[in-house]
Image 1 (cartoon, rainbow, N blue to C red):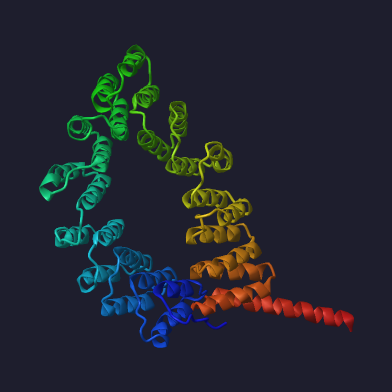
Image 2 (image 1 turned 90 degrees about the vertical axis):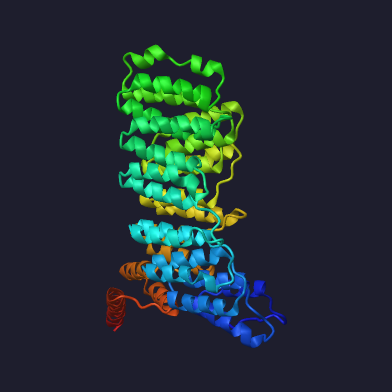
Length: 498
């Protein structure tokens, strides 16, 4: 079907047209053709961003690079997010050097803020353990006027050092942050406190906590509770329960500015006599929950800290306390809870969070929550149940399924042997301008051949070829076997009739 071009073309209209194309190469053809059909028309930053996203998402990195160079030649104003998307696409394709080359060429573009691009590239290099490149890239770019903040990188570097069991170096960076014209934030304290405690450098960790009272907790902040809890639990693990109780009192008084009744209720005798390490942690956590500064942010910080650690009961206590104090749990808390339940194999309980618990609290699920439940169900081989959430997302305003939604469902259905159902999800996916990875398409076509649905397999093959992708040899063999099997069946029917 041909394109219905408007009488006068605007960049917004062109974005809509190219997004409606099922084939990324067809979208690129339309993108290129627009300039010839409308001599006065010029692409702007958002149109380039749309085209670059489409090509990057479909793995067409060569074509994406050509469009990026065209954007540079046009000198149109462009946003940092375009380069973030391109850098991630290069990284996913294993082309980290191309990502670095793109970032280094940013002075040639009409872009005034490189902060997110730099942070994204640094994250990728850290994940690939290219620490020398990380440091060099930071030193070359951290003082440019286009980079607005250095705190994110320094936190990232401290996190890497702590994972490498070099919290001593992380502490040195922390102490030098003020000389970099930036100051430690809550994330800085959280990263360093965890690193020091994991290496049992508890004296330095205690001094860090006291400096925290002075620097960022003078007015009492409930969000700091996750940092305090790290030290208190580390002291318990190191059999320093008495010191933990002593510091807990200071945390409640100086850090959280809790009412006197909260730290007077601490059962010192029970903590110091006969309580094992886990019991002491429970008592300390309960004291922190009661003493926390009542606010949605502080409760969220503590709950979101509990759930990823698998402490589902403690996280639920925070939710109960929130409800008791009249605060509405945030969607972020439910995201953490669903992820924790799915990781613990409690998928039915995770489903209940969306289907009943959130409904009772008048909290609307977002795409991350739906994707979390879908992933959990597919992991437990319940892909058919996961499909109903795709339907719910489609009906919910502002919650359209994304690439992760479709890919998880197709993978899950294929693993459950439901290839026909997977092909139907693929049809919805392509109609929304999303394209599966070649590996997933190969698996789907082979599965359809195995279940005897040759017609759908050939349709998927046509989709694959339209994306300028080549099936592997196993797919061709499966198709050939299926065709031979079908022809053999027809011959037997003819022989019976004769």
